[in-house]
Image 1 (cartoon, rainbow, N blue to C red):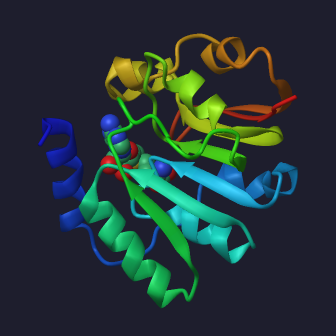
Image 2: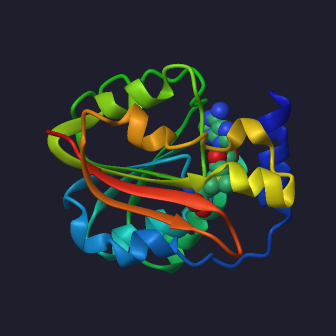
Length: 185
Ligand SMILES: C[S@@+](CC[C@H](N)C(=O)[O-])C[C@H]1O[C@@H](n2cnc3c(N)ncnc32)[C@H](O)[C@@H]1O
């Protein structure tokens, strides 16, 4: 097992059994999202997945932490919703069977490079929406958060320049985040 996965398993196994609040950018911009099948990539213990399922999306969550996914399963029962989960390492996972499959893809507080952006674009149907919200370099500068997991410059706008930009926000304060909603033409 990788060190990173063990770190997340430990984190989730030590957390209080309380469902977190969904991401604020996601909540504010829910009306922009294409409804239907939604991929929550690096879903963790499901604070966003549960919120989205309650709002009528058919959610599939992807994550490598079985402890996170176990917690998600408990919240799913408690909240009376249905969520599919896939336990996978997103460094290498090929999303077999999910090409052009999802109406919306969400990535919240997670970043990988390599061909990750291409792989998540590939699972989104034409006409679908992509929500991406994660830390920018100021999170590193202000809080020492690992630079490798911070967006550089206008990275999201550059990477998804072929998509239509429906919303872009930069948050400063408690956290430093870049958040976008894109439409896939
Ligand atoms: C900061 S949490 C964000 C969870 C969720 N998206 C949210 O906003 O609450 C990051 C998540 O990424 C997952 N993760 C980290 N590296 C991963 C990898 N290589 N493959 C799959 N999941 C990974 C962790 O298990 C964790 O659940």
